Structure formats: structure tokens, C-alpha cells
Amino acid sequence: MGLKILLCASEIVPFAKTGGLADVAGALPKALAALGHEVRVAMPRYDVIDGKALGVRPLTSVKVPLGGRTVSVQIAVSEAVEGVTAYLVDSPEHFQRGTLYGEPDDGERFGLFCRAVVELLRQGDWVPEVVHANDWQTAMIPVYLRTAYARDKRLAGIAALFTIHNLAYQGVFERGILDTLGLDRSLFTMDGLEFWGQVNFLKGGLMFSEVLNTVSPRYAQEIQTAEFGERLEGVLRKRSADLFGVLNGLDYEEWDPATDEFIAANYHADDVTGKAACKQSLQEKLELPVRPEVPLLGLVSRLAGQKGLDLLADVFPVLLESDVQLALLGTGEPYYHELLSSLQRRFPEKMGLVLGFDNALAHQIYAGSDMFLMPSNYEPCGLGQMISLRYGTIPIVRETGGLADTVTEFNPQTGEGNGFSAKERSSVAVLGAIARALLTMQRPNQWARLVQNAMNCRFSWEKSAKEYVKLYHRARKQRGKRRG
Image (cartoon, rainbow, N blue to C red; front, top):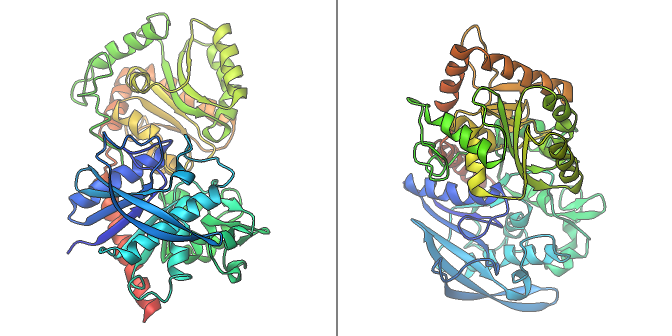
């Protein structure tokens, strides 16, 4: 028998997207619905949402207490995602900003969103068995359910699962936000929302949800340590019995070299000859010498220290002195823009660089490169390595988070493994992993085996959805115990 599930997130494809959260929140509900569950989603109605194209229409309105006043919030609805009803919380003064995040009143904005969702469930005709909240922007939903609405019998049976997509982003605000959101000041304790003298939304999700998870098994372990715990490792260790890791899936329809319309030639695991044409096309597009034999290393990334750009800053000059080519696409911190631009000017025949986001070029780099660089300092899950595996482009990663769960070191003796991994967090270790990849490419039989291994990997959303269903049932069992 299917569950009734409400997944809440601050961004969901196809409505709005700034990062990987939107992809997860768009793909997982479809996979759950395909398994026979009744799934609905909820997110804010930003002005970037194309209401006409996505069939958005008014549904109802709810009254939300906010800072000593009552705000009337409209709820719109859309069926743009097949089999999944989407609720859009429409408060123009909070969400018609031209941006999703980074506003000075983000605490009020997303606190209002969370309470509006709870009011919709209290007043509407549909009550889920599980609320699945994602990241700090939705973390106050379980807080409201267990505090301000704890005596509401209609809501009392709802279990909460809270997913951490990136622990570094926590939603920390001044303690006065409790008054604004109508939450009792008794919550400002170590066992509540208090965090170094401020209020931490994400901590609320950790403390008030029945079950917690993050987006890879390794990251679930890492965030319980001081190195990766972002000052919440104590809380996470306290909840370790209820903390799990579920690897994100990959949309194998969007990322399929056999049907990809952005690449020069299609290919698949049984016939990879088209990959050579993709490499030539990429070299031509980036104005690099067309040389089939030269190793071409790709990178598609946010240009930031988290993604390992600090490690690559020392590696790139060494690499570019050797016989390789680089194809880089990304945008991020000005320091790395300047560094990469200066290297490109110095090595114009070895390095192609595009600072920005270009979806077509991203597909072309995944298809046309021989290897893919992703030496993140930490990586909750990561999709880049999954995509590169799909395209037979060998990932070179750091052994952390989801990268450790998806990329295994190639063993030339056994022929097992799908990539190369640096164990240590150092430029020397990353350079060593690249050197092992370059050496293997000089051995055609081994390289062909490695490419086959990579392309035969599968990280499907169906598998991930089944893992989430287990967690939903666990959360419901936990909720039953607490009520009983």
C-alpha cells in the first residue's frame, strides 16, 4: 500500500533551480510516484517561475501569523510534473525578489514558507503520512509540527524525515527570529534551536525530525566528525542511530550519450567509436589543436575551494607543462577566475576555458574529454562523477563523501574499478591520481576495460527511491512510538 508523502524544498525542477537540490527534489518524487506512492511537493512561488508555461493556478489561501500580524498567503498549484501535485506558496512581498536566496530577511521568508505549509495541511483536505523536508529552508516544518502545532490532532500523526544536502549551509539568524515566527522562546536552548548565541534553522530539522539522512553513506559518517561537522557534529552524533545515507540517483534520460542532442556523435557502451568525434568537436570548439592521442581532461564545476580548486591551483601549472589538454567550464570565486584566465593566456594551445554556465558545453565536455576532474575537499554526493561515468569519461576524484561511494580505484591487475581517487587532501595526492590515469591511458587494453567499467555503472533514482521508502516507514514507526 502506497504512502502519502509531502516533499518540501526551496527549489524544485522544473520550477526553479540554482543547484543540485532542485534536481533531487524534481527527480525523487517522480521515482516515488512510479513505485505507487501518492507524492506531492511544496516550494515557494518565486517570480522566476513561469506560471503560464507550468500551468500554475490558484488553489486556496491560508492565514499565517508573522511578527505580530497575520499575513494572507496564497497557495497555487501545478501538475507540471507528471503524477506529482505541486503546491506553490505565493507571498509576493517575500518571494518576488528576482533571487531565491541571499536576502537579509531570509529567516522570515523561509520561516513563513514553513508555517504556510503546515497551515495548508491543517486547513486543507489532504494530510500526508510523511513530510520530507530538505535543507535549512524547510527545516522549520518539523519544528512547527512538534511545537506550535503539537496539540493539533489532525497533524499529530505526520512523521518527519529531514535530508541534509550540504551541512555547510545552515540558516543561522538572530534570536529575535523566534518572536517573528511565533515560536516560543523556550526553544532557545542547546536541545532546541540555540547555536552559539543565535538560532539555527538546520539544527531545528536535526532535533525535531524522526529520521535524518544525507545524500551519501560516506557523508553521513563524515559529518559526525569535527572536520566535516560544521560545529554540529555533536548533535549529529547524538542522533547517529537515526542518521542514514542515501545516494542520489542520476537522470539517465537526460544524461545518455546514445541520445544526447548536444554532442557531436552518439555512442554507447557496446560501441564507443563516437567518442572520438566528440573529442575532436570539443577541441575545435575550445580552439585547441585537434590531436586524438593527447589526453584531454575536463572540468565542469563551481569554481570554489570546496570543489578542490585550491588543490588544482597547484596542479594545473605542472600539468600544462606536460603533453595534456584541459577543457574547463564554470563560474565562482573571482580569485579562481583570475588564476584560470592567466593560465589560459599562458597556455592557449593547451587550455580551453569558459567562465560561465553553458548546458550544451557541459554535455560536450562530459562526452569529449578522456578524464573528468572532481577533487572536492568535501562532496555530500556529487553528480559530476556519475555523469562522467555514464559518458565513459574517467573520473579523477578525492576520496570523500559521495565520491568515495561511487568511484573505485582502477586495479590494472584485476581489471576492476571505474576511476582514480586521491586519498589524501593534498595537491600531491591529486597529481598522483592524475598520473595513474595518464599511465593507464597509454595502455589501450586496460583503458578500454576501464571505460567499459565506467559506462556499466548505474545509480538509478528507482534504487534511491526504494531506500527513501524504507526511511519513511522508519520515521512513521518512530512517530508511532513517540505518540504512544
